[in-house]
Every structure is written in structure tokens, then in C-alpha cells.
Amino acid sequence: MAWLESEKKVVRRENRIGLPAETARFDERRARLVAEIERIMRDGKYATPRPDELPQLLSAPAAEVESLLEYLCLSGALVRLGKNVVFHSHWMAEAERLVVDCIERNGVLDSADFKNMIHSSRKYALALLDYFDAVHVTSRVGNLRRLHPAYLRKRGEIGSRRDAEDAEKEAEF
Image 1 (tube, rainbow, N blue to C red):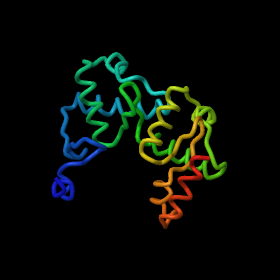
Image 2 (image 1 turned 135 degrees about the vertical axis):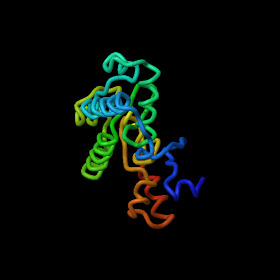
Image 3 (image 1 turned 90 degrees about the vertical axis):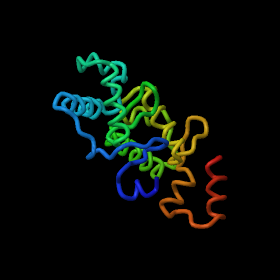
Image 4 (image 1 turned 30 degrees about the horizontal axis):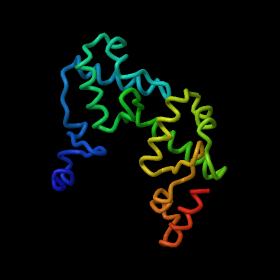
């Protein structure tokens, strides 16, 4: 598997393996659907339609839309945070930047402030924040987030085990 990944024959996205985006070939109709799904999700910013709403929006069969949505997630164009929450990767990167910038500026991030920052609903804001907790960008205590020690280590801001322990204690408030 490592060889296939190193040769770019397959890509790994979280716990799934798929073909690289440039390998997939679609007929003209499916290619249009893929482009339209990606456009809808990009235009939706932080208030995207639920996946089960896409077939009606696209006038396409639900199974086909779900299959193409899965393809877009495996290719990295979209990120599925839950059964009903999918974001374009551009807005995921932007949300992470907003979270990190706010915490660096203020020390913590309140979930209600984040919801207002992205001009979205509580549902979408919490899905994003829970995702950032899960991938160790942030650590949650109540409604507040701090940068996770693993994220700080990755950025080179924590070098020693002692620094990591201090950051863990600080994250507990």
C-alpha cells in the first residue's frame, strides 16, 4: 500500500483509500454533475445543503449523486464532517485559518464567537469545531477552544516533552 501511495496510484483520505482525482474519468453528464456539486458546495460556504438535498437541486438520482459526492470527498475537494455536513476544502482551510488566528490573538475561541465569525448556524459551527478538535488543531474545554499541543508541536512551537506537558496543563485551564 505504501508503494501505491508513493507512486500516486492511490490516495489516502483519513481511513479511506481511493484513486487520485486525475485518474477518474467521467462521461460528460457525470463530469457536469461533479462540477456542479463542487460549485454548490463552494458557493454554500458555511451553510451548505445537506447531501440528501443535492439530488433535487441537481435533478439527478440520489445514488449517483451520493457516489459522486463520495468521489469528491476521496479526491479532497470536499470534506464530510458527518452524515449531513459536507464542506468544500477551500472553506475548511479558511475555517482553520480563522480558528488559529483568533486563538493566537485572544488565547481562546468561544464557539458562539466562531459561529458569528463564519456567519453560519450553530450546527455548522459546532461541526467544524468538533472536527478541529478531532484532528488536534484545537482542544475543547466547555465552549472554549485553545490550540491543541499536537498542533503546536507540528508547527514547531513546542519542542520538548516538558513544553508539551506545560501546554497540556495550560489547555486544561
